[in-house]
Length: 213
Image (cartoon, rainbow, N blue to C red):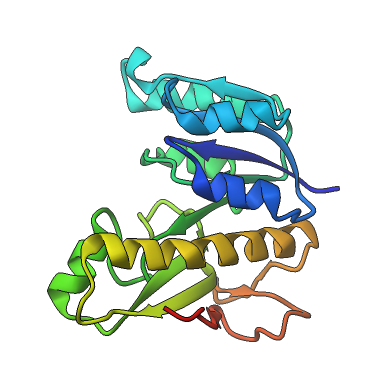
């Protein structure tokens, strides 16, 4: 059975969706950079080993990432899943776990990398927004795409209503991506894009059907 360590910074709603979906990945630990993260309590109640590594206790980003890397390596996971992990990882960390780190981002990448994606989508007047599961590379929010889901941006949308609609899709597509990882279906093509043999997906991104708003 393939295994994963999940990294969180807060309540961990995507972590919860991954655990509850029964993806076939054995979750060996949930780790947070914030000791007060509510998601740690939820994971512990499910019997999942948890650990907090406070980034504020480290003098540098490199020091924190080294400690985090050692904690992850102790569990020997096949995959590292970022689920609301609010840290930019150093190149050294990414190279150590190359092509094994997966993230979910609340936009249709490459549009709106970084923070405040829903606010920016509304301000830019886009008509379609969404979420992306992708591999983590040294280029922030620009790694190869595994799966995407789209939602409409409605004239009445606020940042909060759009975020809620996107979050529903995040909870659908991250477990789907995790199933593909568990089944060994995710492959990199020579062009550096992701292909998922046997899934019906022949390109590097899948726009999943949206639920009704």
